[in-house]
Length: 269
Length: 210
Image 1 (cartoon, chains in turn brown, blue):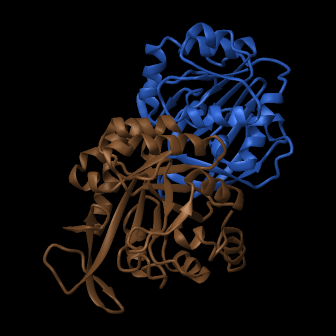
Image 2 (cartoon, each protein chain N blue to C red; image 1 turned 90 degrees about the horizontal axis):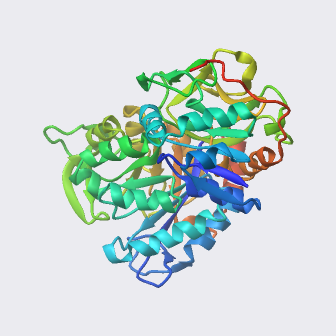
Image 3 (cartoon, rainbow over the protein chains, first blue to last red; image 1 turned 90 degrees about the vertical axis):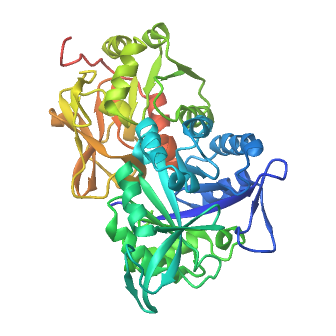
């Protein structure tokens, strides 16, 4: 049986020579968590199922630094690597694949240019194209949006871009379905309402989207305890769960989390 | 020395890294002569079946691959590299595969597609490639299509995803896996190590003459 995946996410600040993993983008106080490839190797040895690198600088000049990080990581880490942040075209993606990435993750560029999803999946295969969606709840009804009944009332889900700095008015459920149709192989679904709160994943959001699309969904945003991972796998059809600082600072260790999930009857590796 | 066939489809660096990690020298090439004289050949690939076949023909390496297999060169097909050894695929109905084995490639139905993640291999035969690999080990898959060999005897492992499908084949000097050993942690590295040390006793004759 296909196992549920646990994915540590490494937010990389490339403005520092060689790059550093930093604690979540939205935290005002930046805390360094270490060198990207060293942290990746630690997670690989601890039993992480995949690793996601996010380039939070996403500036054109620093592109080369991410390539170096991927190259270094792939020499010693033999699980799948996804890279996201600032990928705008086929050539950007090709360079990352060549360095050793298995998948690329696109967000802003996919919303601005949906055809890119199609072109990337045609060129590299659907399995290599992850579409990341940053979502915020909007309460109340609105025309042409998918309204979801939640505990706190009716809401729709809005997509944001530029690292959650700009809202688009686009409905996340409709966009997820469209992205899947265009050839995306996975959806990385981040709840902005929950990100950094440690209150748990947005179960209603994850449930809705993982049931609406026919491709795997990775739940992200809000993990703060082992039980949050159990809840999201039990309550939704999410295929994987992603977290960042929780793992970096060893608040939860991956082997311990997996043992817990196994005991709870969740199929993990 | 491991020769990895480069035909413009997918992540070759990771595969090269895995073999180098195991202490092997690696050559990545699209040169037909290098492929024909290789000691051990690895045929990786992800992406579209039709596009892959067109690339192989354009680079004139389709026949060298067949010749190497016929000569008895130890050969490992990975993911799309496994699928291309068969006759045809639902992904590209108008393109013919390399026709080493009879059978076809089908798309998953009624399950989330692509299948992405760690799934278990039910090892049917303790063959060379699975030496010292525990039954039901987890390995990493990323694919929308799977092979259905006509000759069931070549199937050495099956995996369940909605239904059972063939996740590995072995026939004399030819090995094929649907999953990615280079991305399957220690289990995957052991499988690659088994390929490095495997000594085939005889060679596969393509079932379909061109």
